[in-house]
Length: 84
Image (cartoon, rainbow, N blue to C red; front, side, top):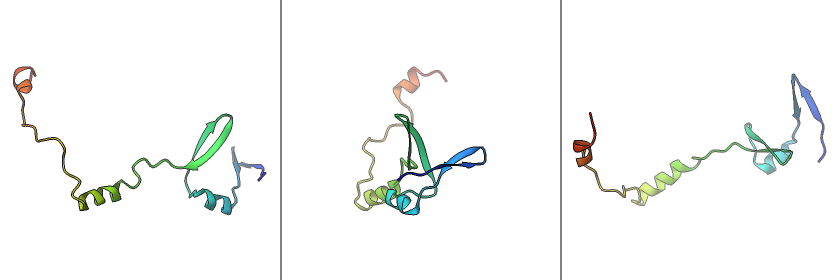
């Protein structure tokens, strides 16, 4: 699809047809990157998306226990090496 770059105030913009946005799964907020002399429009990176459900599933399966044993409030290093 070929389109024109339009003036929007001091910036420029491109109108993206709704079917393209839907096909790409893009919503109101997007991330812009420049890669190899191209502007790439993509979804906003949400690194923790889905964590809440994953943690809920882990708890339901009893798979949310600490792997390390409890450590004492102070250690020998705390007592001998550390200067308070």
